[in-house]
Length: 447
Ligand SMILES: [Zn+2]
Image 1 (spheres, rainbow, N blue to C red):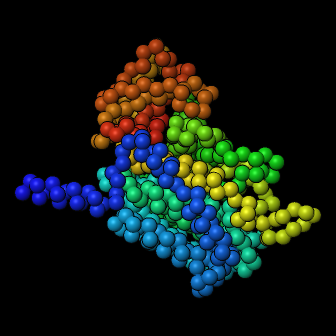
Image 2: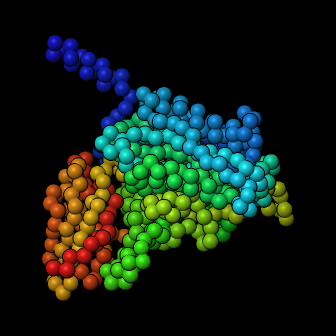
Image 3: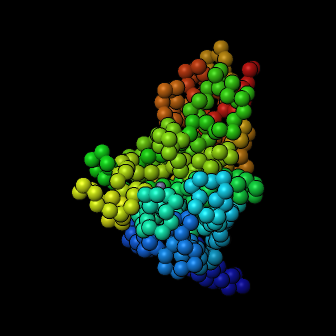
């Protein structure tokens, strides 16, 4: 009986392709598993659809946004077959009308392709990785001219699909969503649609990692750099109340919103596990005056950041393919560096894994220490945490430079640390060593 049972369990183990990875070593395996070759192949496939303008043809199987999204869906379905149907794949769509939208040439469905890998402990906690299906020509209303969108944004979408391939071989406590969004170029419609969908379904979003242009290493400024990338994050959520804004004057938090904590998390994970890379946090929502698909999530109060190359080339984005005065315009595949896209995909994958293996962040953190030679912290415990880590930093520092692990308790006093001179936060640490994002204090203890 026991032998039979053992054999049965062994067989079950051998048949299951899922690895319940839970160690830092798994992060290196994940990095090594990301395939430059598959990313290149997927970008080529997306480019071959001619144009993926959101308002382009939906009936052809060769050209246009319809063919492109059907291919993305079938790709997610193939990945799901390889992991015992671990992905729930579906279209999430909203109807957009020409009326009232000056960049919409005709009424159309904005269709996102969503693949969800459900978490084992916290299925309603979601980490989202996104790229865009759609592309555009010089004129965003022009939905027939070739718009290969190789870097903008087949690179981000190919990275998202590749991350799904690799991470679907593991199991996670939290859910991971891999999504191809549409309608980015005409008004962030796809992101807005999915953010609303998430809000309606009461998803608890840990963060959105939006990838938009992760394949260009040759800047218009002449710099060639295949190591540096940018993490854009807004300082504080736009949904905060006037009262919360007022309190910041006295207690701090101007650069400590949830999206900023997510940016710091990605910065730190990258430095630790991919030290050859050079992440740069940019303290702003997005590039000057421009937008991306993390914003609609931020608009609804969710944490979200944009991962992007550091040196853009403006002659190779949003441009019809042509040569003018010796300059080759157009977002063609020849300009994409696949090795770099692979690295930025790996940056996403390890951060998705770290967050998906981590316990939830503490919800409430209270801080006190006014006119005291110490800083006191008190927080709400998290069910699956084995302990907590207190972080602090100089007020001018962008990163959490000091920390102290304090075990399974819910309050602690940092003696000799004067509250006035630092910012503080708390993360939860799981049995497996993985850590949540940092929660900035949201309560004051006066005594
Ligand atoms: Zn664009």
